[in-house]
Amino acid sequence: MGVGDRTGRARRLARLTQEQLAHKANISLSLLRKVEQGTRPASPAFITAVARALGVGIGELTGQPYAPGRSDAAAHALIPDLRRAIVAFTDESPSVPMSFEDLTASLDGVREGMRRARYSDMIDDLPDILLGLHQLADIENPGRQLEQVYSTMAYAYSKAMLFAYQYGYLDLAGLAAERCAWAAERSSDPIWPIAAEYNRALIMLYSGAYVGGLRTIERAYTASERIPTTANLLAVRGALHLRGSILSARAADNDTAESHLRGAQDIAAAIGSVRFNHYGTGFRPSNVDIHSVAVPVELSDGTTAVSRAEQIRLPASVAPSRAGHHFIDLSRAWLLHGDKQRSLLTLEQARRVAPELTRNHPQVHETIRVLAKTRRGTDPLTRFAKWANVKI
Image (tube, rainbow, N blue to C red; front, side, top):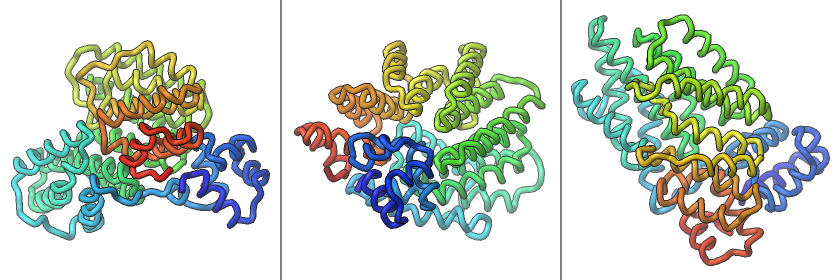
């Protein structure tokens, strides 16, 4: 079932009419009817509002984590190992003891897997990386080396958070974000706690806690103004603006979202070509462009999103993970704009660039189902749905 079917089922179990649920969730009755009928995709903001009104988890409406297909069954199968490593925290040891150099080398592989959106390539090593870093922290004397271990640990937990989120394990992603903040506070790097707040705000975004997420962003930005400004710090501030733009858009606050976008654009222009460490946030001028399209999509303004997308050209250096997200958003924009053919073609672009990301993205599943409802299952759409393990 899609979100529309699950919404209708949960609504009936709660003994609510469509009119009553629309009022309780503060959404339009017309939108609710279209989503339940399958002719309008359920946006993340819609899902959050309905889940809160019905008293159910977001996963109960999206169906995440999805049943694994053949292509990513191995990644799902390894989630228990990652969960044990994160839950065990400091009370378990890696299968094979590793030096700090070995652990950082393995983490470089994880970083590259995330960049390329090849998540199944990275998960094997991540549990032992986390446990190994904790083991080193337990035996290391206070000093610069210990602080470096904690900085590396914060980064490793941020990758664990993203992996767990990617496959729909939001509870595990939230725990990893908290562990990231724990390690960041011990790193003695004043920027890491700010980057950790950026990560926490992601969990709040996908949990529907938009007001709390915006407060987190504001608190982190205020903290950043108390330390010396460097290119590294500017990059993290830019990332805070980008996260704030999406949180604001989900909260239907267009003015604040656009203000955050302008702040990120100013920072991107100020940094220019200077080399910097973005602390795993991925801040780049191209990422600002990607968010400029994502914001109107979150506000259900497909026409503005399509218009902005036509003005940007993503450089070849953009990470596949970022490009994949962009094409997923752009597909949603074309659907909202009314061009279903372009919507499907853009989904195909996302699939070519970042297949694992595309197959597991809930908004891709929503787009496929709406296209199937209105296009009567064309051969290309049927093939795509089968590849994405979506029944239409």
